[in-house]
Length: 310
Image (cartoon, rainbow, N blue to C red; front, side, top):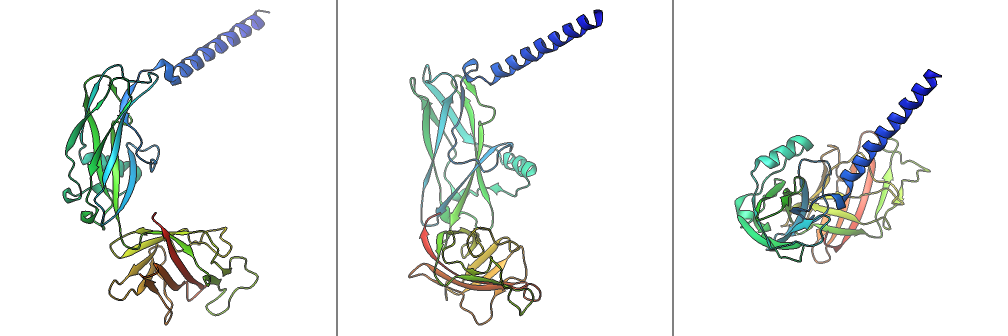
């Protein structure tokens, strides 16, 4: 009997303790039990969650001189600021980029001084509101195409309130778009063919065939004359083409001839004697390339036309 009573008391104690712990957890997560914080609102989608800082990516044509809008928010259970709050914003040290790179395994670098004119500013979240916005002037024509450049900014101080720990400092990855960057639609005549050896086409292979009705592909700026081709798929469009990671097209501006390569497969190249060309009048690429030429060859004939900006 004593054993039964002891076990019952033990179970009751554990249940009470767990209930208390759960209640504390719920209270901690309940915004109504917390306080407002001053933070950067998300200016775009966060590139990678769980990083030391939130990083956001933007791309602009080299002919543009945009001003990137950034919003500071009074966030929390209280809907509006009870008084005017002056928020001071400045550049964060380059070491914040180093911290991000170390944690995530990236190679971002500080945006060069010619690419922007921002040094710092102050904004006021007015009483009865919860946001204030400022802009950062950018000069995409001065961005370094060979690097992934980042502008780190931070909330240095506020006249009142609590500054967020998670969104006090953010990283802005800004990139320039070259003349070929954008979303492109596959055209009739595009096709892919797989081989079981250098000379024998595979048969009964559902991945072979026309690709003119496949989903759009993306061309992303790598340098002034090079783009990376994304979302390339086999016939039918249901699965992506593997084995040719970082597929790239480089345009010679003098001739509009295109050279194909893949950083993930050194065998990928233009098919000798075939057309690989960009037509600036129609914004259309005609590309013919193959890979694994001495084993399981793959041949892709791709015609894509510009649809819109990325």
